[in-house]
Image 1: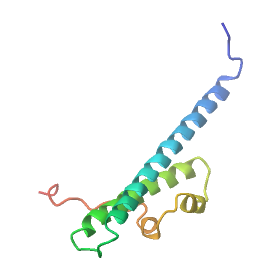
Image 2: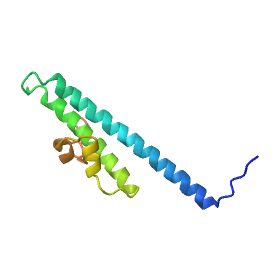
Image 3: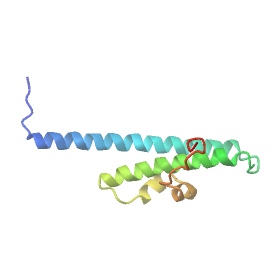
Image 4: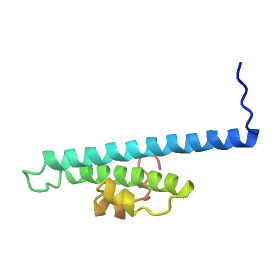
Length: 113
């Protein structure tokens, strides 16, 4: 039977760092998936000019990616990683997604009744 001889505060710190790393991984994967959905949508509609009927669906994907980006940036900053330029380059985040980062979606009109 082995016994960990580290002080309890060191053990707690180690577990906190593990959870931070896990959360960063989850947020990064969520961002990757949101950006992939946006790129797939753009590729599927590249042959046709931007139709007014596809604008709301595309805007929803951009907002979703912006929200995922915001969550990832906040999580990184909470761990002390302040420079988000690396994220923008590594994930090839479009400027329009960067501009809507952190924007909350408008409340639906159905909910206000």
